[in-house]
Image (cartoon, rainbow, N blue to C red; front, side, top):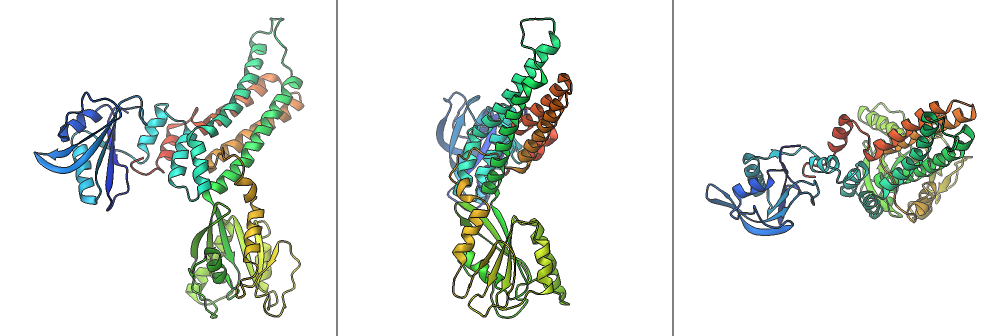
Length: 447
């Protein structure tokens, strides 16, 4: 990280202001080459008015922010050029910065440097990305918790508990001759490890909630043609997003939209009607609909109240058994011909606007949204960290079984060290270069 990096940190396009960020040892020297004020000895965290110059030509009127190491985001010297927004001007200023000694930053490289320089840990870095991508107010609140280190504290606490056990075991192994040390037996450490298991279970449960807050709920609406799928989508979105007609097969591709339910973002997908068809285009739409079932967090299976259950619908009922689902029977304003003995059924009439609020409440209940949105939001929320938490739990469960089977204490210690290292991967205390590169590659260029 000896070189100096630069990138545009604002969205490229027409706007009042664009910001070019520079970070590294040469940041001050580079800005002095293109700025008509000498900022070599100015105080840190000050802003300076002037012009960007190229061969005595004024390129733009700017404000330059000077932030000196180590009290910066990257802990390096940082310069931010606040220039007028617009593609041409912004690119020209960036070009001058690059030709005078900086290198174009890779995606997420500023945040990566903040992590590698010890300014933030890995969960805080991921919190920054979550904050940028927050789809709801709750997601924003949770991201701020990550950013301020609340999530890191949870993992650090569990790791500290593990270190206490490991250190006691090591004293017993390394210094068995000392009579004044407490003898550590399987029976003595079993309750401590069970406590760690409970901490992990609670953290994993909260993490699943955090994933919902962060990523939202993906809802797929399925059913045969003309059961009201598009109409339901429009009702949930409160706009006429999907075309609605009485003609079967109107929806041939997926139609998507977003709405907020109890503070949680919901991404709802209206699928093509599922039926046997010889139409090539409609068949492709049906295949996509079947894929949506597998990829959705919640499946809403729609049926017609005035029709008997078809063979295709019976097969779909079997397919969604293992998924979180709600069966919605539409058109209750018409004569009832639907006989169905299933749980989790809601009857509605989209035409008469009956039952929509009941459906929304059922979604809230299924995902415990009321509980999620009122609790402390210090949650882990990404798939990588959740996977590592579950791996840690498996190690702890294995250790508990070994303890109960009388496995020697030194074998238990090895497992506990594996758990400690695995938890360290969550906050970046232990990591590989490949992991770090992969995580920060998801960031935008100037972050």
